[in-house]
Length: 177
Image 1: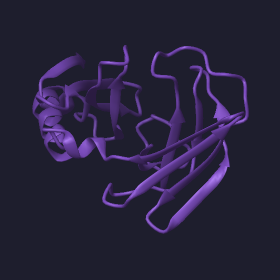
Image 2: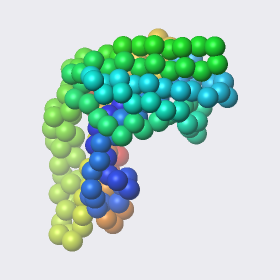
Image 3: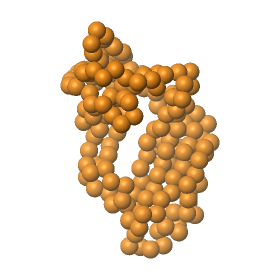
Image 4: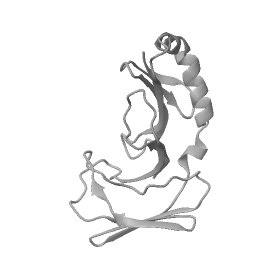
């Protein structure tokens, strides 16, 4: 379950629009194998609030749903997913609370790394700049759990910058300028 705020129209175009909460629940096999073509029903309980429905098949062989809410990670979160003959029931843990590099520190690292490039982009005072930040995970195998902060910048002129920061070490893994 990934939560946060996003634009209503979610266009990376250098123009910030109204923000709304999101909570994307994703179901995917650990081994990245194919999911059964089935109906996956969910119940997500965040604190006292429950969200229920049916998940949709995604392009990457997972099933997803946006429950339209976010969380600060302090609430108890329980997920129950049912499909033919199976029930998956888990109490979720706040993975980002284990990061050595929090979102504020990640933004500071990105700002320091991209500072000169951002100055160049903002020379034209008529150019809008939009920033997106998200957690990216690497589940290339069932044993690997690597998390990264992705911070991307795009202008109304379609110029883009970005960094990928290791959430444990703060090391910059990749940079696009």
